[in-house]
Length: 263
Image (cartoon, rainbow, N blue to C red; front, side):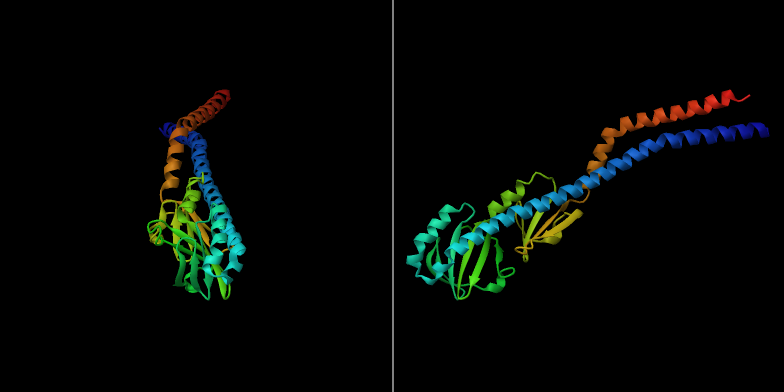
């Protein structure tokens, strides 16, 4: 009776050993899939953020260049400066309009002509950038203002927020990108009213523009990593199970062969 119990215990131990060895490649394969998806999402979030940063910096640089070209016109009356302002607006695709400033008063605009509007520098992030939900001309379309100031003279350059939205949307990586200008946020769908309700918690990262101070946020929605891991696991499961079965069969054959060779 003791011999039968000993033999049964040995058979059970061999069975469990074979099962564990057979499951090892399956578990390893699933772990590798999860790590690969996590790394893929991290790389996508980083690439998306850096690409958005580069594209928007390029737009802002064109605004700066245009503003620098016309800054000296702020010494002139509006009717004298307007022809050159309009030429600059027409020649630069990223530029929607130009506004001349004198002692923080917007007195000449390519859209409105002569005006008298007080500009508060404190509303601009780093006293340079302001993202607004719209203005009088396009109340439902975001506008990005770039402010160049050499007091008492200055220039406001405006670009259409839709242009920035299109740039964000054109990024091929699947990560969600949100660009922050001070306390305002812009995504590919428009102004983000509440960043706290934005779901980009997985593989989240942020990149700061050292030139202009805006921030690019990038990441994936909760559960997106698991969804892709699950999909890849289901696709790879038959192959992994086959490897596990072959491994178990090989181990079983090795044990069986060794047992038969014993005298």
